[in-house]
Image 1 (cartoon, helix red, strand yellow):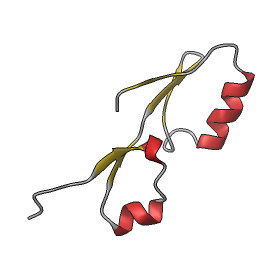
Image 2 (cartoon, helix red, strand yellow):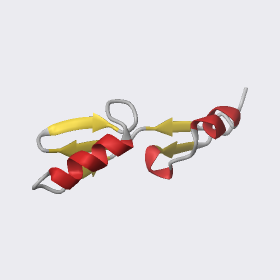
Image 3 (cartoon, rainbow, N blue to C red):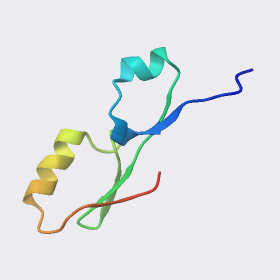
Amino acid sequence: MKKVAVVTDSAATIPKELVQALDIHDVPIILNLDGHTYKDSIDIAPDDFYKMMRSSKNLPTTSAP
């Protein structure tokens, strides 16, 4: 049984291959934009979120994972 776990959030942008190889627990950041909530890299790809952000009149917010 492991006594230590490495946990990070998706803001660290660790490559998926490295997350799997090192058994890192990567928790998605919650992104809020224009009344919608997304889980980073699960509900929306980073590139898509940045495109939406550029065209939005509102700044995005985040909340704790």
